Image 1: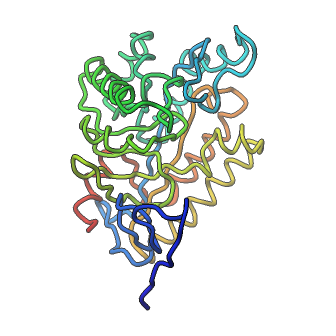
Image 2 (image 1 turned 120 degrees about the horizontal axis):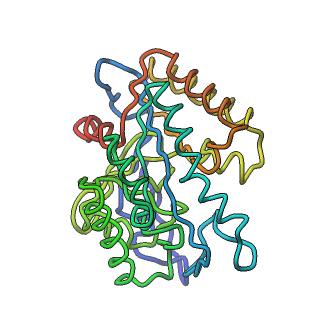
Length: 312
């Protein structure tokens, strides 16, 4: 059936106004209509675990807005500042122990300012050999409408370039604080040599973006089962969070058997899940997912390198 976009006037009359996507950033496609993805060794489910390593300034400027999870009480908000700092001093070590015990591969999303401030943590994470992706400069550097394009370009280049210097890694991936973007963010990321970003959650498999400097890939990182969304925003219990992740893994694992490779994406935040009363719930999740059979635990770059040649 041919669709004709009806005439409009005023604010409803804008470039690219039409049915379907009203932009040219990526092509529309239904998940069930795509060629099935095949993971190495024939596994059905890829497991992509992101561990954010974050620096929350004690005096955030909040321009053009505050990132969720930032300081909320009058300065100095030591209650929230020290809780975030706990993750990088204590919680991260518990998470690493649990991930290693389950043979799960983490990808670290790093605020560059944190590795400047914490060289021992930087040395430990780099020494593990896991993938490191950029997470902007800090949790007070927001990529959103209202940020001047030249200022955002400098921010992206500084965050990515300095992280490459500190780690000696190529840094191919990106996660924006709060998953916020301006209209310019994808173009600026591609120009900085980023191959994929994790900010858009409108899919469950990677898809290709068009930018001014070529392709940029979206690796959708689920918000619905992220620890901060479930535990902090929705105020669910730890047991409920674990049940939700296990349910998601079960369904994706079953879908993969019928329709081709799927990805379970999971965010594990050290200052939140690294607390003593939450560790057993994390260990239950990791044990359940890895027991399903046919699960490939991999970094974002490893998944992208396998997926990209298979996606039109």
